[in-house]
Amino acid sequence: MSGIVSGIDYSVLFSGGGSAGSVSSILTTLYSGATSSGTAVSTGNPILDLKLAEQNQAKDVAQEAKNPTVIRDLAAFTKGIAGAKDINTALQNLNVLKVLLTANGLGSQVQYPALASKALLSDPSDPKSFVNQLSNTAWKTVATTYNLASKGLAGLQDPAVQSQIASAYEQVTWLNSLDQATPGLAQAIQFKQQASKIGKVDDILGDATNRAVVTTALGIPQQIAFQDLGAQEQAITTRLDISKLKDPQFVNTLTDQYLIAMQQQNQGSSTPGLVWGFFRQAVIGNSLVVGLRG
Image 1: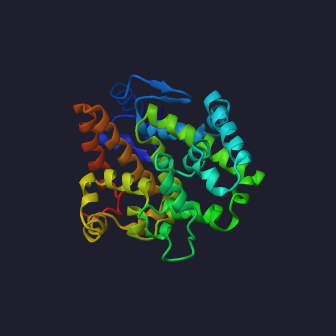
Image 2: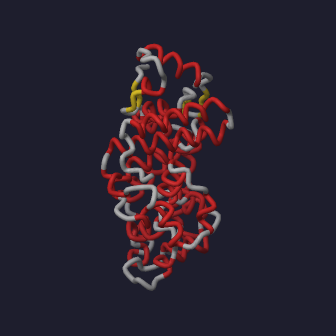
Image 3: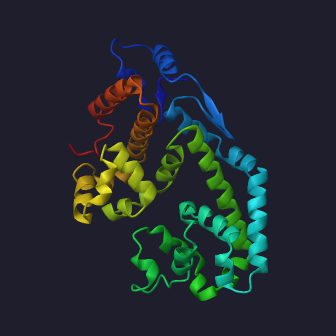
């Protein structure tokens, strides 16, 4: 492992101008004790875990597709659609709902079938429809993607659509395995994939992944969710130049900050806290986080 991970030269964290080899040795000591879960393996260094996950994504997702649980879930999904008499019946089938919502980033909402059915059968083009009243914009994205309000059951019977959902379900299952090994890793990957599409502060607040990564990386307390929308927007815009999210290097740095903060929260040890302090000082001093506002 070199002294540079995700574009950040960790040699700047340590005084004395240590070599890349010595820096690597220090990091290995600090982040020793690898753990694994499913296809995901943790080195103990969340930034390195992110790099490895991105490199091995195709292979690991393919491996996840062979997971007996995933195979069983997808078979139940296909069977549920085939046996449904209409779209309402299909959405009342928890096997169908589980795969459909999980594949589209709404797995935590499977326990609310009535809400899901009402949202997915809403007309996303109607500003007054139910789906447009929900703060979680993922519902509107799913409703728009499948257009079940118009297509009905045919929207899920299309073999191409079922194949896309199956692929997405395998992907999400892989992401979940990453989180079990390295807390926050799944959201880090998702954030990096969609950060360039963020154009305004509401794109952060209205998306669970964007909100989690940005607020955690910037050290904004999660209790901000209980404040009014204006206060939430100000808490982010006073700390972050959103236009910088178009810059991949800046996004990498912000994501790395998030992962280190998550490790701190989950380990509660003093050593990561020390490294985090040096990390912040180093990256700010080297203008790697020029989009952050003091």
